[in-house]
Image (cartoon, rainbow, N blue to C red; front, side):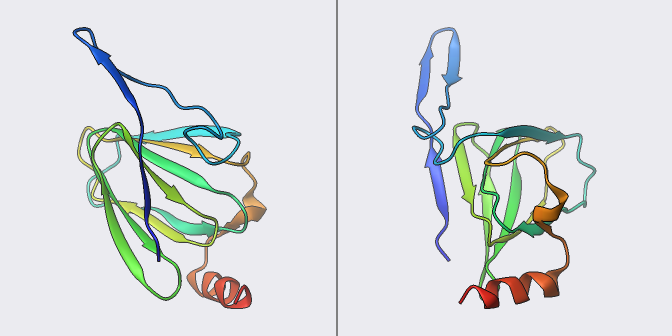
Amino acid sequence: MQVIKYAFQQHGDERGQLVALEEFKDIPFKIKRVYYMYDTVQGVHRGLHAHRSLEQILICIHGSCKILMDNGIEKKIVSLEKPYEGLYISNDIWREMFDFSLDAVLLVLASEIYDENDYIRDYDEFISFVNAKK
């Protein structure tokens, strides 16, 4: 499984830092939805799903967290702790977000608007989905 992390261009001076993101320039898809998670309770795992078609970029814009990525064959854990780094997650990856620092804010850029029918929330169904794509 290939892990794709983006290091976004930072613009800074004595006033501070700024990161600007543009679809198809910095983000490899059209951005149709943006959301973020914060005040995540210690010990909680978020996500626990895959998507049929949606793609995402995850950016921990404050604090830190870990992302478990699972393609049905192998699993990798990726740490997000820099506000200028983004993790690309394709549709065929089971994802779990966990180990959130108390101050973590996880921003998600998504290629599609919310559609419950795009979610695969059962792990066995996810395995069937990825095996059918082979």
